[in-house]
Length: 434
Ligand code: CMC
Image (spheres, rainbow, N blue to C red):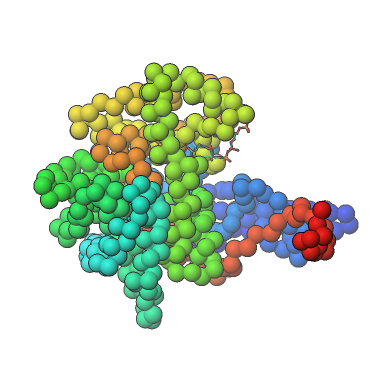
């Protein structure tokens, strides 16, 4: 890990006490106040809802500049990776820190193939979920269940163990995702094939059936690669922070990733891709009038939000949304499909971007705004959208879990609070309470 530079110090005066807080600078030029000695030296902590001003760690994995819309994985621009790379290669890059050589790539792909099958006993689990179980609940439960079938290896070769656990998770999570869909569709499971690439295999497991084999279109394989690459990491977002936090208790990787899946499910995070489509469908049902939806999103008394818009870090167009918007157009062309929801989405975007409410708050489309339209065109049901996000984010979660455990400054994550409850009081027996 490269060290953040020490570039000065700030003075904090509290009464007679003076605290010197070091100022550190990261590689992207961002400056942070190092408050690690604050409580010990000044007897105070900080209050920061949503951790909007708090760096929880140092990280080498992803650089994000929200003012300029820059996103780099291990230094490589997201635009280059989306255009030239494939998801498996990006997964390797995130977890191991560099692009694989041919030999490393082939070994990684071989491991992905070797670990793609689920233990046959696990396939029975799918039948015990109620018919309308959300696939994100199934995914999270199945991933933590992997720890009961595949306990972590206890050999001495850490790199080898990490390779196996990483590829096992990447490969099996794809199989779990496809099986959870097949279960809800009431169709037989389609097993992974060694002759297919990661994304082609996934499409085949989702859409092939014993009565009609699925024609794998290379353009759709490419589009799925692009989507998974765009979702592969996004530094300290909610689900990645969940993985780091749960992982900091030193649970196994499966348990930490399972908690990340649960966090991602939320409508303010990865669940927004499902919410966007439901919102667009609602507008279509309502006659296609986008103005009403914008007015609702602006109404401070209404909890409704314009899903797929706004971001904690991006204060400009999300670079991932730009790529997805173009991919969306290409996929619809390849499939020779027209989706009225795309027209509604475009109009909604245009209207929002010229509205003062969104301009003042610097709210732009995010990664979730257009992705659902691609998934829909490919034939994926709405409830599966966040599952794809999870599949894409998995290498990022693994990379952060690994980095946090290898960090020499590692500590269990345990924030403080400002207590605002009652002062000391004494227990009153039940029949004496008024
Ligand atoms: N629609 C309407 N108003 C919004 C929206 C939106 N989508 N996003 C932010 N605002 C308003 C918000 O009400 C607040 O207004 P005011 O200053 O008057 O109180 C202001 O903009 C700042 O918003 P915030 O809630 O303080 O921002 P945040 O950084 O805490 O939240 C967010 C970020 C992504 C949760 C939020 O923008 C949001 O709820 N967006 C809709 C859900 C969504 O698309 N989520 C996917 C995020 S990107 C993929 C991912 O990481 O999962």
